[in-house]
Length: 212
Image (cartoon, rainbow, N blue to C red):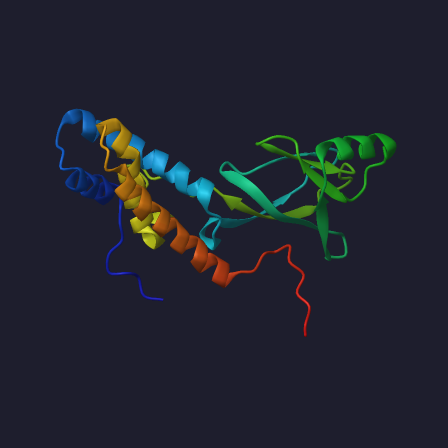
């Protein structure tokens, strides 16, 4: 697939934001990175797209039920492990309290049947793995944040309008500008377009499809 003729960058987003705001004072210039970061968080809370899906392949630690999540994890989609015969087996989501109770009643280590979110940084497997099983986890991540050292990401490449209008929207309270509704509408429309595009591309993974 051919690369687009123009891709927004962190530097160009800074520049275009200043042009839209028609400001050149130091306070506004210094605040733009904050506006960009806030826009990224706002968009991340609104959408789950293919651009956020990541697949991590790793190995469990025998005798350790805890497994660290990736740095920008947001939501788990599926977990499976590969047994000694090479077969992939799903690990099912359960509440952490259920897994603790299950582990207390089943003290023998074996291949994990369930996983839970211990907290934002860790998963918990039960039963405790008895071997270093290969594990594959599909999850939604927060897209790599923009910075002077990370000039582009999935949003700048695929939704530059959402990034621009989202950044301008975050600037409005700082500038005490009552025109924020203009950028709010534009930002909402850009995010809605992202959602609609993704809905048309992939079905809900939890849905059961029955052939007619």
